[in-house]
Length: 236
Picture 1 (tube, helix red, strand yellow):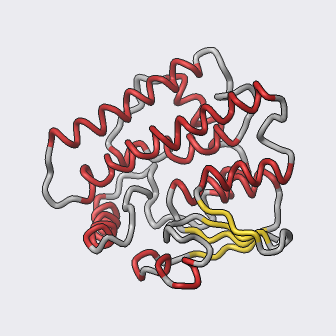
Picture 2 (spheres, one colour; picture 1 turned 90 degrees about the vertical axis):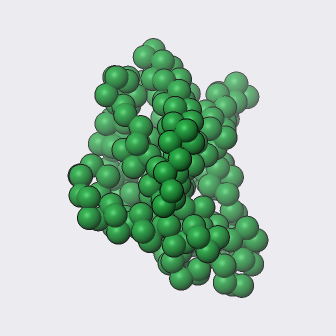
């Protein structure tokens, strides 16, 4: 049994999607970030960085893993799925996983902060992070023109990137001119395990529907966490 400590953010949903795809039994432990539950001593004993997601593998002497990318690799190796075992195939998956960890996630996270959460709108900063997010989207679109998935077969690299790309509207990044990325986004969205994963837990904000009041409330809640330094406030 896996204990999953999480919240409704892209990084959290990466792991819940993977667990659903791998058909691993897991217990959902949802942390209330607005109450700083991720900073409590019992959770810091699992993840000293005080961020979600984290897991505890109860079948491996209560082995704890934090950082979403590290969790995906651990689970893939545990199950022998969604990560090739040959050197080159594994490297391809890890390259695209690191592309998300070092690029897509941080750039979209900062877009969220400055576009949605900061009370002062600094347009040059917003343009910088949205522009870089769009550049990275173009990299994905160009690659997906000739590939069904990011690294051969469907893998943890697809899961990691998709969990962020699906939130593009919240970051203020348009995808209308990226047909291959849209095809891939919709293809993954149709997978039953992906549909289950993004409901574990469900977000209070439906990213496919324009609801100004819900968006305002969500942004206000995230802004308060950001001001107190208790959350990255980049996720949705």
